[in-house]
Image 1 (cartoon, rainbow, N blue to C red):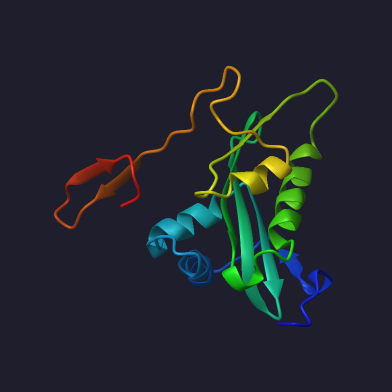
Image 2 (cartoon, rainbow, N blue to C red):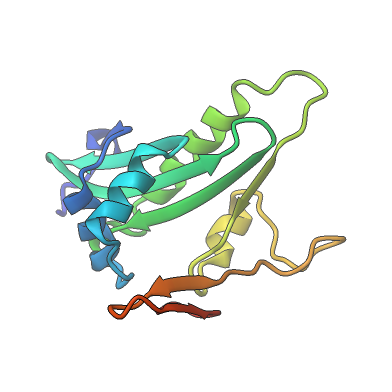
Length: 158
Protein backbone atom coordinates (compact mmCIF):
# COMPACT_ATOMS: atom_id res chain seq x y z
CA UNK A 1 0.00 0.00 0.00
CA UNK A 2 3.04 2.28 -0.19
CA UNK A 3 1.82 3.46 -3.59
CA UNK A 4 -1.58 4.52 -2.21
CA UNK A 5 -2.97 7.64 -3.82
CA UNK A 6 -6.29 9.25 -2.84
CA UNK A 7 -6.99 9.84 -6.52
CA UNK A 8 -7.16 6.04 -6.93
CA UNK A 9 -10.11 5.82 -4.53
CA UNK A 10 -13.53 5.64 -6.14
CA UNK A 11 -16.65 6.80 -4.31
CA UNK A 12 -20.02 5.12 -4.65
CA UNK A 13 -23.35 5.07 -2.83
CA UNK A 14 -23.62 1.30 -2.43
CA UNK A 15 -22.20 -1.27 -0.04
CA UNK A 16 -23.23 -4.90 0.51
CA UNK A 17 -24.31 -6.10 3.93
CA UNK A 18 -21.21 -8.30 4.13
CA UNK A 19 -18.86 -5.42 3.29
CA UNK A 20 -20.73 -3.11 5.70
CA UNK A 21 -20.21 -5.55 8.54
CA UNK A 22 -16.64 -6.15 7.35
CA UNK A 23 -15.87 -2.45 7.77
CA UNK A 24 -17.56 -2.42 11.19
CA UNK A 25 -15.52 -5.46 12.24
CA UNK A 26 -12.29 -3.85 11.01
CA UNK A 27 -12.70 -1.00 13.52
CA UNK A 28 -13.94 -3.19 16.38
CA UNK A 29 -17.61 -2.20 16.22
CA UNK A 30 -20.45 -4.63 16.84
CA UNK A 31 -21.80 -6.38 13.77
CA UNK A 32 -25.33 -5.57 12.69
CA UNK A 33 -27.63 -8.55 12.12
CA UNK A 34 -28.19 -8.95 8.35
CA UNK A 35 -31.91 -8.10 8.52
CA UNK A 36 -31.23 -4.88 10.43
CA UNK A 37 -28.29 -3.99 8.18
CA UNK A 38 -30.40 -4.49 5.04
CA UNK A 39 -33.11 -2.18 6.39
CA UNK A 40 -30.60 0.44 7.53
CA UNK A 41 -28.71 0.53 4.26
CA UNK A 42 -31.89 0.60 2.17
CA UNK A 43 -33.34 3.48 4.17
CA UNK A 44 -30.21 5.61 4.29
CA UNK A 45 -30.76 9.13 3.02
CA UNK A 46 -27.29 9.14 1.48
CA UNK A 47 -24.14 7.00 1.56
CA UNK A 48 -20.58 7.60 0.52
CA UNK A 49 -18.47 4.45 0.21
CA UNK A 50 -14.74 4.65 -0.52
CA UNK A 51 -13.52 1.82 -2.76
CA UNK A 52 -9.83 1.09 -3.33
CA UNK A 53 -8.75 -1.64 -5.73
CA UNK A 54 -12.31 -2.99 -5.85
CA UNK A 55 -12.75 -3.27 -2.07
CA UNK A 56 -14.62 -0.92 0.31
CA UNK A 57 -12.13 0.74 2.66
CA UNK A 58 -14.42 3.34 4.21
CA UNK A 59 -17.95 4.66 4.39
CA UNK A 60 -20.22 7.36 5.75
CA UNK A 61 -23.98 7.06 6.02
CA UNK A 62 -26.59 9.80 6.48
CA UNK A 63 -30.05 9.31 7.94
CA UNK A 64 -32.50 12.18 7.65
CA UNK A 65 -36.04 13.47 7.43
CA UNK A 66 -34.87 15.15 4.22
CA UNK A 67 -35.82 18.58 5.45
CA UNK A 68 -34.33 19.93 8.63
CA UNK A 69 -32.44 17.19 10.43
CA UNK A 70 -29.48 15.11 9.23
CA UNK A 71 -27.49 12.55 11.22
CA UNK A 72 -24.09 11.44 9.99
CA UNK A 73 -23.46 7.89 11.13
CA UNK A 74 -21.27 4.88 10.38
CA UNK A 75 -18.16 6.94 9.67
CA UNK A 76 -15.66 4.13 9.15
CA UNK A 77 -12.22 3.93 7.57
CA UNK A 78 -10.27 0.68 7.78
CA UNK A 79 -7.34 1.16 10.17
CA UNK A 80 -4.70 0.61 7.48
CA UNK A 81 -6.26 3.45 5.45
CA UNK A 82 -6.71 5.92 8.31
CA UNK A 83 -4.63 9.08 8.12
CA UNK A 84 -4.76 9.07 4.30
CA UNK A 85 -7.56 11.70 4.03
CA UNK A 86 -10.29 9.23 3.04
CA UNK A 87 -12.45 10.15 6.04
CA UNK A 88 -12.03 13.86 5.38
CA UNK A 89 -12.93 13.38 1.71
CA UNK A 90 -16.05 11.35 2.54
CA UNK A 91 -17.27 13.83 5.19
CA UNK A 92 -16.67 16.72 2.77
CA UNK A 93 -18.62 14.91 0.06
CA UNK A 94 -21.51 14.18 2.45
CA UNK A 95 -21.62 17.77 3.70
CA UNK A 96 -21.63 19.04 0.11
CA UNK A 97 -24.49 16.64 -0.71
CA UNK A 98 -26.53 18.02 2.20
CA UNK A 99 -25.71 21.67 1.39
CA UNK A 100 -26.48 21.45 -2.35
CA UNK A 101 -30.25 21.87 -1.89
CA UNK A 102 -30.04 24.52 0.82
CA UNK A 103 -31.71 27.72 -0.39
CA UNK A 104 -30.82 31.26 0.71
CA UNK A 105 -32.00 31.89 4.27
CA UNK A 106 -32.51 28.19 5.11
CA UNK A 107 -30.85 26.33 7.97
CA UNK A 108 -30.46 22.62 8.59
CA UNK A 109 -29.07 20.73 11.57
CA UNK A 110 -26.31 18.20 10.87
CA UNK A 111 -25.55 16.00 13.85
CA UNK A 112 -23.18 13.15 14.54
CA UNK A 113 -21.90 11.14 17.44
CA UNK A 114 -18.15 10.85 17.35
CA UNK A 115 -16.38 7.59 18.03
CA UNK A 116 -14.41 7.70 21.27
CA UNK A 117 -11.52 10.19 21.14
CA UNK A 118 -12.18 11.09 17.49
CA UNK A 119 -13.76 14.47 18.29
CA UNK A 120 -10.70 16.38 17.03
CA UNK A 121 -11.23 15.04 13.51
CA UNK A 122 -14.80 16.40 13.43
CA UNK A 123 -13.85 19.71 15.03
CA UNK A 124 -11.52 20.30 12.07
CA UNK A 125 -14.57 19.74 9.84
CA UNK A 126 -16.60 22.46 11.60
CA UNK A 127 -18.44 20.43 14.26
CA UNK A 128 -18.42 21.35 17.94
CA UNK A 129 -18.48 19.22 21.07
CA UNK A 130 -21.61 19.10 23.15
CA UNK A 131 -22.55 20.54 25.52
CA UNK A 132 -22.07 23.81 23.66
CA UNK A 133 -24.07 27.01 24.02
CA UNK A 134 -27.70 25.99 24.44
CA UNK A 135 -27.01 22.45 23.17
CA UNK A 136 -27.00 19.67 25.76
CA UNK A 137 -24.91 16.52 25.69
CA UNK A 138 -25.34 13.96 22.92
CA UNK A 139 -27.08 10.89 24.25
CA UNK A 140 -27.89 7.36 23.12
CA UNK A 141 -29.62 4.22 24.28
CA UNK A 142 -29.20 0.65 23.02
CA UNK A 143 -32.23 -1.64 22.88
CA UNK A 144 -31.90 -5.40 22.39
CA UNK A 145 -34.43 -8.22 22.26
CA UNK A 146 -32.60 -11.20 23.74
CA UNK A 147 -32.95 -14.82 22.63
CA UNK A 148 -35.84 -15.29 25.12
CA UNK A 149 -37.80 -12.38 23.66
CA UNK A 150 -37.07 -10.01 26.52
CA UNK A 151 -36.34 -6.36 25.75
CA UNK A 152 -33.12 -5.10 27.29
CA UNK A 153 -32.24 -1.40 27.26
CA UNK A 154 -28.90 -0.01 28.25
CA UNK A 155 -27.05 3.26 28.00
CA UNK A 156 -23.98 1.54 26.61
CA UNK A 157 -23.26 -0.70 23.64
CA UNK A 158 -24.38 -4.31 24.13
